[in-house]
Image (cartoon, rainbow, N blue to C red; front, side, top):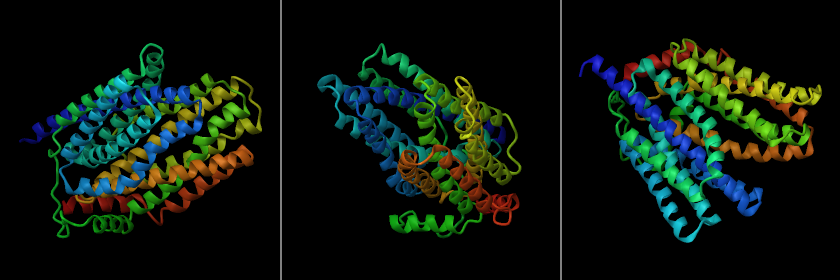
Length: 428
């Protein structure tokens, strides 16, 4: 196969990859919208809805490292295809069960847990395989296009779900979800996962390595990495303190400032718009030449934007002044997250050896997911007992401090990152 033919096939891979991600994600958002309304209508209980979310989070936290181990041991295409096939089968079984016996909370909880289990393997498998089906020069474009399709799905999914909920039964949501997963499955079956696969020359690769030993080896690799460990630690604290905004913004807008649910919807939708706009822009640009500097700028921007959340609490802006203000702020939040996520993902793809990539992304997934429930519970309690403006300003200060200390130039810089990329290319 000539280089030109491989590039053409890589373009085809990107088309199926992006299309599959978009269709699968928009189906998931439509389903989540429908099932959320159903649970709240059926029970009138926020705790029942929270339990549904918990059933989706806990399996991902527990299984992410195990999924990383499996992804590094078995063919990634098989893992992704089997996982998406099981997700499709799950939705079909629930669809037929609901037609026959009706829907109840235990079925909803079991379905959420099963989808979380299978999606963990599928997500880590496809993420770890990106450098295998896309050329190095377009990894950033592939990551950006995926984020833009996910953002667009996040915007359109709730809108379509809201329209459909008024006309269709809950069973239709299961069927639509199954069709979306089946379509994503067909797209993934058409991706050549071995187009750019690099066989590592590392002598310590052991396909039959026990699970615990494999997980320890993955953790040891991250611990000893000059770039991955600082980035992962900073990302851990960023996710933790960012929960103050996830919990606090709806509370501030609805309870403190007295906005309507429609106004809150407009504010929250702007995060998706910001991520969509900037991810599309980045997909058309050359690869970041200074990824560490770009990440540092994005993280510091998040910290300062976070502090600005407190402004309407300190200076009355009135309505719709504060709504417009928060819409603009959330747009910038979405853009800043892309400025952070894209260089991180590209750098991790390029500096992580083939035989460690699954475990590294599995560990990142566990860290990112595992810290979120703790942050949600802590800040949920704090907003009930302390001033929202104080919580926001303190959290913003910690966000900035963590970034300044964790990504200080003396600890990690772009020269170190470039050296790691060159070293990985030389070993492959």
